[in-house]
Length: 173
Image 1 (cartoon, rainbow, N blue to C red):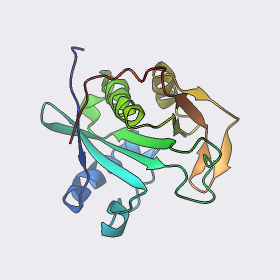
Image 2 (cartoon, rainbow, N blue to C red; image 1 turned 45 degrees about the vertical axis):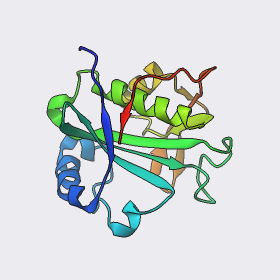
Image 3 (cartoon, helix red, strand yellow; image 1 turned 180 degrees about the vertical axis):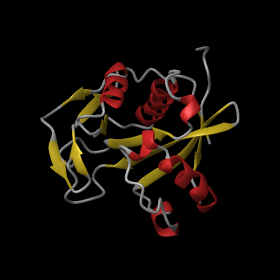
């Protein structure tokens, strides 16, 4: 795959139909709760930034990052102040298996580290080997056994900010 840039724009109510279409695909619904995606209140929640990810003007993925300290009982609450959690999926099945996941997650990680996040945490299902492999490529390591949370069974993983926070070119709008 040639080097690509990824654009991140805030998800809006205009994206609900697209998100519902993506969440109906089996490769997404196997790991992502496919209830009604979001409402206006959820999209305006200051604890969570929700993004539509595009490359070459083509939207293909959803990503969210959030403050892990925004919920008193969050399973990442013991991580350092400023830690961000991430979740995402590639919605367009034609974009799977081409390295886009590793690339756009890495781009967003660089932006979060540049903004001061000391740690980024994620919580894939322990059986989601594809996601775990991508996270490992990006420097995530498990930090505890699988556990049950209010969001389901998870494998807690974290990546620490690199020394000097080396920044990649990231197109984020």
